[in-house]
Length: 326
Ligand SMILES: Nc1nc2c(c(=O)[nH]1)N[C@H]1C(S)=C(S)[C@@H](COP(=O)(O)O)O[C@H]1N2
Ligand SMILES: [Mo]
Image (cartoon, rainbow, N blue to C red):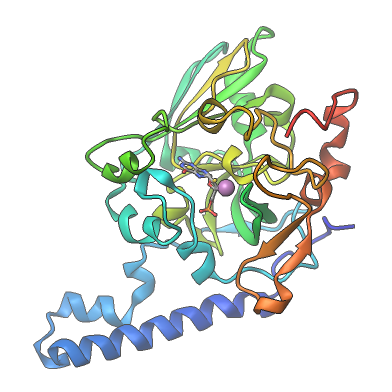
């Protein structure tokens, strides 16, 4: 059984993050000293050097444990989760989002919920954070590019938000739109084939599945910008591109919505895109994946059907040809 009971983050697993901050703190401090001399530093700059947590803008979140967390996996380090990213608005290389996403204006931030709903609502991010207790939910993350991580997210089931808005019976899908601004995300032109804003979508039952997480943080703190601050979607049984970052709108619609990667290359990225080791991407195998952060000879592992979440989600696809819906 891959989903287990709390305690969901043993303190031993948090060490990698603390070790990272200690390392960063030491490195930044030494670099600062070498470059300018500690005495010459202004108080503010010095505070940033010795307190990198603040500089990284992570605010601690109050969280509770969840029975829906994944146990028995070694967590990917904070360093890897925040420096090996896909966020094409900020560049196409894995290290680009960490370098370029600093200008994402995460406050004030509103999420508009509209379309086929009884109650169209616009939520301020700080109200959204208080809508439901924030849970620690560790999930495997499997990118369609055949790499994976294990990420301790913080959030609550998207269904909690959907319930508040009372979708009409005609609403069959939910469409998500990411924030988009050419001035802030000027790297978005690097892949000229993409239609912005980034948009994704789920069928209503997928959106209501308790595993689908409205995500505000990771490692117990608010999301770093490069991971989709201040709020993103995480759908752990689907390839990573289904999990839209930095969302500003959720729209309830009657028909299957256009989605960014499906629109860009429909034969490579299906609307459903459930993790499936038996259906290869046209250009590479999906049978195995590379777990980021492990020693080279330990990285390769077998990809699991539905990324290992079949007990929770397989019934939603009963009767569907799984060979077709990659
Ligand atoms: N807005 C937006 N959301 C996005 C992407 C993107 O480029 N833009 N990339 C997707 C892909 S391909 C993956 S694998 C995950 C990566 O999330 P992470 O960088 O936090 O691991 O975000 C997804 N959400
Ligand atoms: Mo991805």
